[in-house]
Image (cartoon, rainbow, N blue to C red):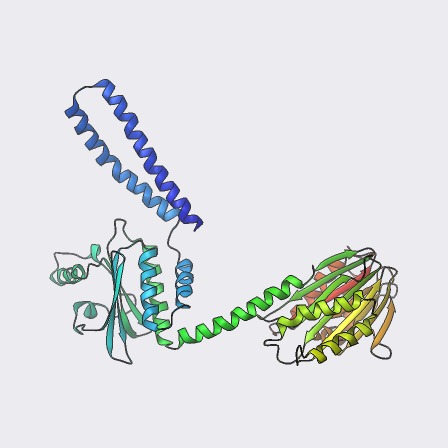
Length: 463
């Protein structure tokens, strides 16, 4: 839309300059001569000579400011397809969009249905369009005889009128009010013709290539006869997922946080429309003495349940701000979910309270055990909870608490010595530690699907 506005402003500006130039020259010439016949002849010749120049600059504006781009053509057409139920209407909308974007006032789309053994003609002239169903098309038409494959594009201006066969071809093209003919093929299967009418500006090689690409896309859509209905269903589901994902992401805190002496760095990445891994960072009370950190994951089928996660996040924050320790806050959360019947799926949850002095109390409900890196001994080990699934540890300056998703947890367990050395080599910068860990862990994960979550917590020394 922005390009179209700039295009229109430049064209009107060019026309305005042209008019001003005429007025300026008219004033100057009238002062030099009083012969009105001479003046009239002069202005006719002057305007005729300037019009091609103006037209040339109009073409430059069209090609540089708002050229026809295949991506734009495809996206706009697919957007219109998604609101259409019948395949014929989709073809009509597609063809109308092609003519509109190429600024052509007339054209034909002749489409052959192999399953019905019949032709439909989609016709447009001067912005008026119609569909001719079960059209009578001669199989021995000269166009069908000439076109033998998807590369046989016919351009009327390139035909030679002195050759009898090409003269007959020109006559047939003119009968159809065409200038450019692009065949529609799916591999070796003929599906129809796109006949584009003439316009003032010649079709460039790039535009013809774009039309050829678009003809192949029409062929693919036609072969997949169920495309429209399936796409509509998929769009509806994806729209729900998209809304859920947007809601979830708005509720997620920043990946980098520093609250008092506590520094937190998070890596969170999802590989699908629906998120399984979630995290939260918040101050429990009005003061910054206590920071709560949560990591939780939906188990089982997440369809239709992931959208509830912001509500679960709000519940956990509410129980924490009531002063409940991590174990009791988690217990209250699960009890509320069960009593209210919010979701049927199980949630694995890690919830920790970290004080500014380094005291850390956590509750682990079916989540992976965290790791603690001790800077004094340069060692890395898992932290186990004690009784009723609640654990406790003391963070010293330079220590790093690591909370990770199941995949990352398994990789670290396999080679804790390697990751201890990697963390120790990054000094006190928590951002560098995060970057190094993620580089190593994601390389090991490779192309495996699944959400990725890594939460790092340190005291004082993080940057």
